[in-house]
Length: 171
Image (cartoon, helix red, strand yellow):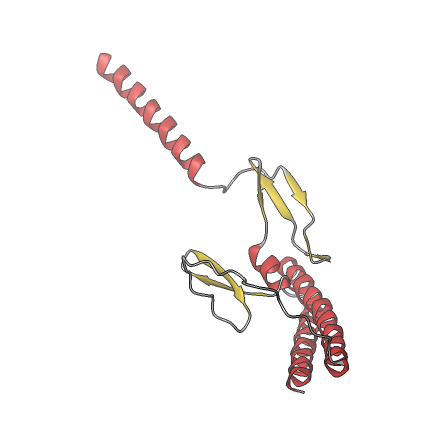
């Protein structure tokens, strides 16, 4: 009889310990306590940030892309880098500015070109918002052909705007 009682107690201890370990290792099955709207540079993300056990979790890819970063995932690492540029090498040396920084008056042609580029950038931001929203909606209704068509139109518009911006930068 003592062996049976000891076996039941040992089994109970193992079950409780395994449950505690499993609960601490994952967020799967945890209740979402709150949802928050996320704005990046004044643009609202389609996917909300959530709070689980007092910690906030936000959609990294959507935030990174909207902020102008190239988002890559390799293994279990998510990297946010400037688009078109590799991540700068890490260095222990700190650079400092020595002396005054010269100030020059802007060239009117450069100012006009910058203004055109800023307008194109605003259009790109709007199209990216539409792409993110459409992609998010497609997750909830993947069979929606009209939404898929709109998403493709937004992607084409995005590519055209990038070409326009590149042309302005080359002038």
